[in-house]
Every structure is written in structure tokens, then in C-alpha cells.
Length: 252
Image (cartoon, rainbow, N blue to C red; front, top):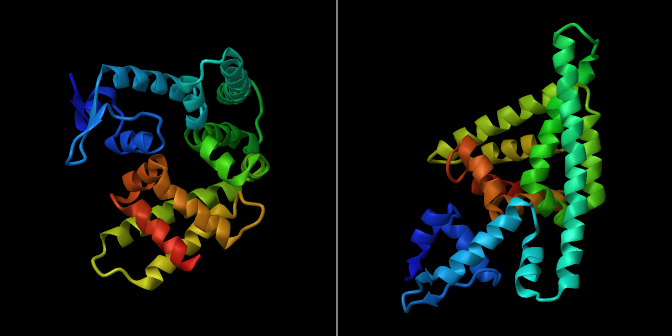
């Protein structure tokens, strides 16, 4: 029995866009493509997608999943698994650190310990970093490098309470302006420029140095990766991510 790409998406919870992308990178080819260009999948492809989702759940890179599924060499598979094991251990350390921060916060509210204002926000900032790592860490590291990402995380953790609040307020204003801009029938250039400036200001709280090239590169990721697209489209309406990307490419 063959399943259409829509049926495959409904069955697996994977979007049709992602399935088409997996086809493009030769990770999951359909069993058949008819003359009209519609993709169809068999039980074999369903089983392969199940394996892909298993490795994605463990935060494997798509390139590594490709190697695992296509390799019959134990040494190659073991090397990939060992690398991922080390990454999981590091992730566990992050989680342990977050748990400790939350425990301290609970103890503070019980009156058992004292906490500085910076320490009160530590748990929230660590949680935000953990969420970003889980969602976007792989892609951002591939694009900007390990050192740049670690520097940004360090800046985030060391941010004062005042700066932290400022950054949150700027992001809220950015989202609100982007939402309004997305709803406008006659979109004005000056509104787009203001959105870009807000986005730039927001980035500079964690970027040690700013460049328009890096800014534009990040903007491209908002469209290339559906998770980035979803983040802005959910907050500011469908099409918001593309509007933000286009504005940054034009005015950054």
C-alpha cells in the first residue's frame, strides 16, 4: 500500500515541507513519484522515517543520520554514537545546573537562603539557553561556529537584571511592530527599517561584535529552517518570518 505525502505527514506528525526537504537531501526518498509530481511512500519509507525521528529525538544532525542509515561499518556508527554520547553528557550537565538554580530559587522563597538579584534571574536565563540549544543549537553552531555561540551564551548568562529586562522589552516591541507590519496592506519602508533596527539592537545584547553580513545570514535561517519560521509566524502571524527576513536583507 502506498501513502500520499499528506497521509504520511498526518501519520507521522512530520510536515509535508520537511518530507520534501528530506527528499531533496536524499535522506528519505519516496517510493514513487507520479507524472504530476506527487510523492508516495511505502512501508519501507515509513520504517525509515521512524528511524530518522528516533535519531532526531536524540538531537542527531541530519548528516549523521544519513551516515548511520547508509553505513554498514560498525566503526563509523560507533564514532557517530560516541560523539553524540558526549553531547548528551554535556546536555545533562546543563540540565543539572538548571535544576540546581531552580532548587536555590525555591529555597530562597522559603527563606532558607539569600539570593542576589542576578542569581534570581540565572534560572530563567539558563532555561532559555537550554531551550535555544535544543531547538537551534546545531544549525547556529554550523553557521557561526562553536566559539561565537559560546560567547553569546556567556554574555547572556552574565547579563545584569537591568539589561535582561531591557532585552525582553525590546523583543516584545519587535514582535508587536512585526505583527502590525504584517497586517498592513500598504507596508511602509520606514516601518521595515524600524523593525530591522530593533532586531539589531536585540542581537547586540548577546553578540560581542555586530556585522550586517552575520545579521543577514541569521535572517536567511529564519526561512531555511521551519522552526525559526514557526517561532515568528506564531507570534506575529503567518508570513511574519519572511517579512522579517526580507526587511533585514534590504536594510541591515
